[in-house]
Image 1 (cartoon, helix red, strand yellow):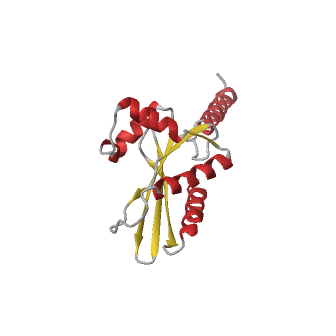
Image 2 (cartoon, rainbow, N blue to C red; image 1 turned 135 degrees about the vertical axis):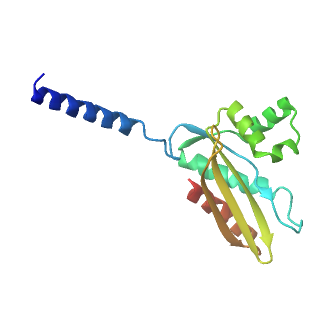
Image 3 (cartoon, rainbow, N blue to C red; image 1 turned 90 degrees about the vertical axis):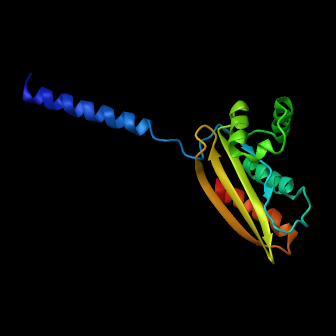
Length: 166
């Protein structure tokens, strides 16, 4: 084999390898077509004076942002509830994030959003995590600080947090 043919073969090999590496890049969190489930946000406040449905209300705002973006198929809350009932899982078992991830796998979710809120003094802290269901790895985490005296601001804060998360 001549030197030119050998060099040409090496160049073709490296070119092909670079194409394969480019195709095998890891998926971004904005991968279209992936499904995502949103859990109700946990109340982490020390003082329990907040309506118990606030976590559900904030989660519904996150879901609305996800639906409006159109980048994900949102696993409906009703499907989560039905799966919970079918598996007869109690709320104490759902405290464990790995149990929630198993449920997400069963429902075909690629991503899950977990989080919580905490009111301390005159501020509310809202935390969200985007977790890859298959690996359990946190892909992104964000937090927002919102004035506690403004309940309508809580809704806007949840929407803004969801936008920043994705």
